[in-house]
Length: 377
Image (spheres, rainbow, N blue to C red):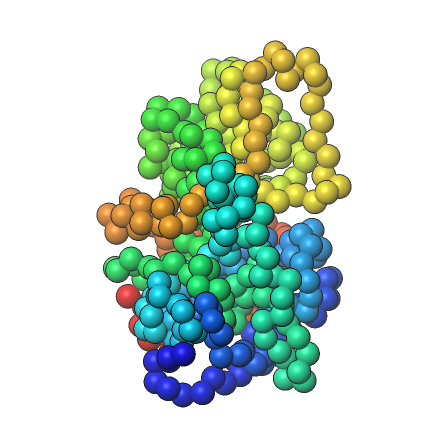
């Protein structure tokens, strides 16, 4: 094993979820030296995603106690035996759903975003608290910490020229939003797009739809203050969410409905609104993670008459190793603005308040920013 400076590993600060539904704790944890096939990363930044809130409140099942966080970027400090794809000192983006390459979804269907083993690492403790208690890695990467240890295939080399802090957003929000537009909804130039939910992922969807050449991009959110963010990202229209959303969208599209609707809120009523606002033969894509008690109903007749497609979307149906270089080109060319997704820059202590802001529908992406990570370029 080799490190940047040969110093032994030390304890680091992290955000720990003691158990589902319990308050988060900022405390020190003890990371092991990276074993075979594993990599230690010093985090520059981590985004606070709604999926982290879903883990904390039990919407998504996950072992606990756990260090949350799955959207991050940083610098490799040490690698274990057999690691060849990255080296100490290299800047990387964390990949929270690394595919195995062997299961039916990966090897046969070529759909690695559905990998049956993508989060197998979440069931094995990866670190300890200061009393020796075992800790599990939130969605494999445990990014709400100053440093983490992850499998080799959970890191992606970051192309040169992209700021390391904003690069954290590439690990989830941007790959998800980009993929929802280009891989799942398959938005074509000149089409109309509806985006429900203007958080971090929704802002990424809006930028991706603009880059795809959508002619009309309608943003919907429960908070009026999101309108400037939405328009800056590419929205041509903004609507406050209500029980009239689908009718208002149809009014803006000559009574037809949009070609593609992308739902980023994960609620039954917004999924239904996205479906109802889509034209005959159009595509409705659900990105938001809803609870199992959120039921959406359709009549058999409308399914036949409308000819619409309704689909889920996991990680934007993306292949990170393929899509990250494409996104990097758009970022470097100024077509995709990573910083426009960020409305709050916080420390680890700010994560509980960031969760509260998400529940209240305030802001875009909150970004945990660490100092001393060796540069931001």
